[in-house]
Length: 76
Image 1 (spheres, one colour):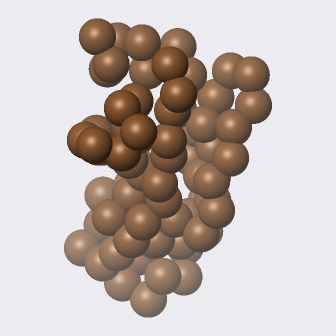
Image 2 (image 1 turned 180 degrees about the vertical axis):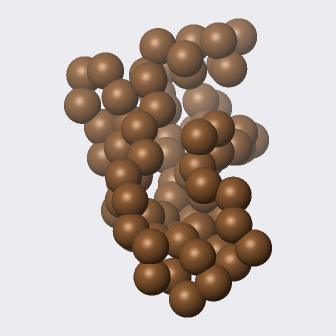
Image 3 (image 1 turned 135 degrees about the vertical axis):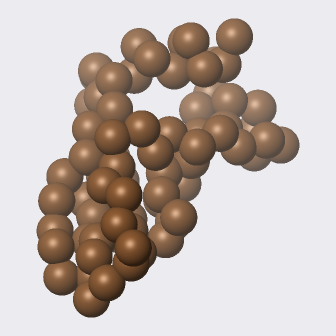
């Protein structure tokens, strides 16, 4: 399975079919009245990581992590 990831100002998205369809992976991202911008995205053997800024002034920074083994559940 080839996995594509996209970080946007609406969160993190996953495609397991060459970009034909996309699934939101925003579980655990902060919910704010402002915005959540994904500034960078990366992976290792076990997780997806995203560096983010959030809040009405995009002045709160953080790191989000999502386990890769949860992708199997999403893609089946």
